[in-house]
Image (cartoon, rainbow, N blue to C red; front, side, top):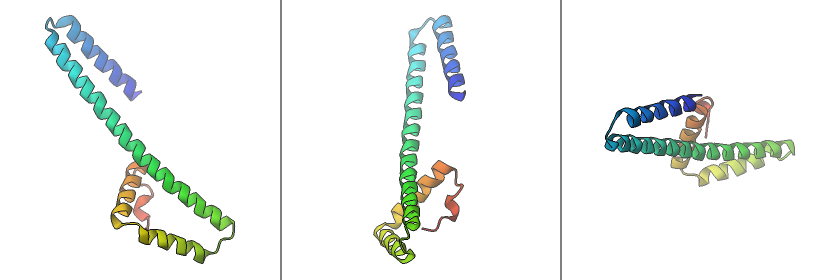
Length: 115
């Protein structure tokens, strides 16, 4: 609904400029601002999708660990695998993952995450 209202508002402003302003420069300036606004919205959506994809991949890894546990893989084997993966991961990558997860979920579960 918010996007629809934004569309109606932007269209109404454009129509007012076309109808009541005789100079095309103002409409072109307004059109330029609209193009910048759309580009900004697209870049925000792309960034959110990137973060969502990364969080989904980590979620899939957690599901795989749950399946391994259901298949009676020993806790020690899982701890070895996890500790090896953790050692191979930089602190920078872990902090980046925490930030992406916090951005996607709204910090619901990330603050208690122990990686």
